[in-house]
Length: 539
Image (tube, rainbow, N blue to C red; front, side, top):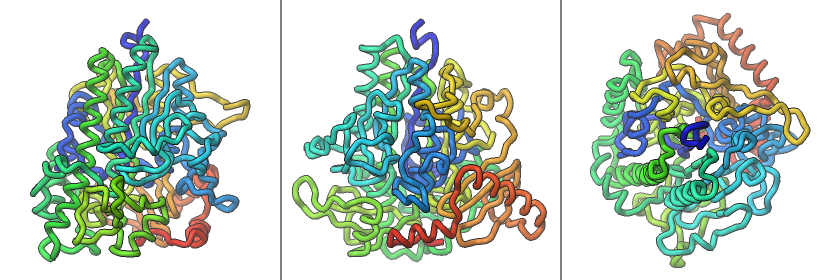
């Protein structure tokens, strides 16, 4: 029996630092016809959660475990012995390993970000964690024109990016198409698992001129008006309840009417939108390849983002260089030898290889409409993601909504059930933890919800637990807050003073989970950041 008639192919697509409401099918202004096609012909989840940061989200997505259990509690930095080792643990199974053991060919095109050593292959490299073919970067971020740690299999190929016109988002998409074409030629009767892991729209703001031009004037109305317009579209789509008010503009963000450099500000968001647009174009080419080979109808396609919109603001001048190099080395020159100037400076233009900017808190506040907070934090703005599932053979095709609260640990069990794959009890002869999540296929089909269970989060001392309608959440230096998510998902009415017993019960459940999963205390997190020479993000 061929893969077209039997077990589904699987395409898992991950965006990087994209907010809850950026794409068109979740209320945004960005033109995303490829994702719209998947949404209108599939199922959208309204309450799917990630893990607030890139490396931890990837670790959880790929293993069905919480990131702390697999060595990636913060980022792929080695913080041992007092913190997380930063390498994806060998004492867990990846979804690629689970699928490969079930007879799937396995491919990865894009970002990895789960290994400490990014120059010398180690057991945490994708080629050693179940992927037959790998093209992409080991690093967490960098230039879209000349990315560092660009690898094919286990060979550095950074020289390929020196070719004129080379652009990372396009290369990720084109390589995925190549993988699929070769798969159809060489293993056409076998199913495949393809992880398509974009770095768009993570900073820096790098985009094609023609893509940026498509958004000329689109953001001139400013973040205040656009947030209200997004909420209206989200309510109309049924994704957001009309009774949940829009969160106030972040108090650190000026009113649009008070902004001096409005043209430059609008250009930053236009460039960010262009990054998402270019990703969607690439997704379209991948879908076209599946359609040409007759595989699309029996392909389970899942799309989501690794965290909420990113509020990180690069200061102009020397401060920007310090900001960037705290995370990744900066490419100092362009392919033509011109200097790369980092920093959010209105004198500079976002988009070309010669500048290196972020879109900042103001636009991230728009990206996460209607929620509070951003990447890093575990309030709704930091952990809520669009989630689209498309599988004509196995799921509804009517663009329906699934409201079941779910999170990243559920993706591996979902893929395993669809693939008829078995989650192993051990790896390389050593016992591994049971997957923490549950399959979402029944929920996506509208046949009932996933098991009634608590959902947990922790990142950099930011903590949360959700039990049914109640969510207990705190920032790394703050006190517990309590929200009725069914009545107040935008987290504006803190009910902590009314329910001290419930707070105690949920806090105890969170602590038991943290102890079981190896979460390090938040005081220790502060020490780790201090040892690295930089602090946690501002509250």
